[in-house]
Length: 116
Image (cartoon, rainbow, N blue to C red; front, side, top):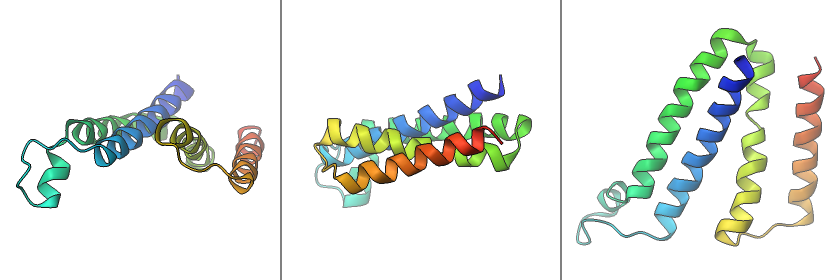
């Protein structure tokens, strides 16, 4: 069950980041004349992203209760991989050979740690 909590935490964190980014790049604020900070927090995708991120934290606490942090925390780096790939597809962000190389190193690191 501990890996279910970990995976849920990672995926909710990814969803949170992507929702916040989406809300900031395509803002449709409820209060168009409000200061920029108010506009950010009046965007439903930003609020949904913050909620997903908060849920991610709850599942992270469940993970920490059952797993060694020296194994669990490095696994969170999988979120970097997922967000980078999603950024390419969802937001047309550049994806260079160096990013692929970095993702490869992250995945190799996760593989080593998961076998520890």
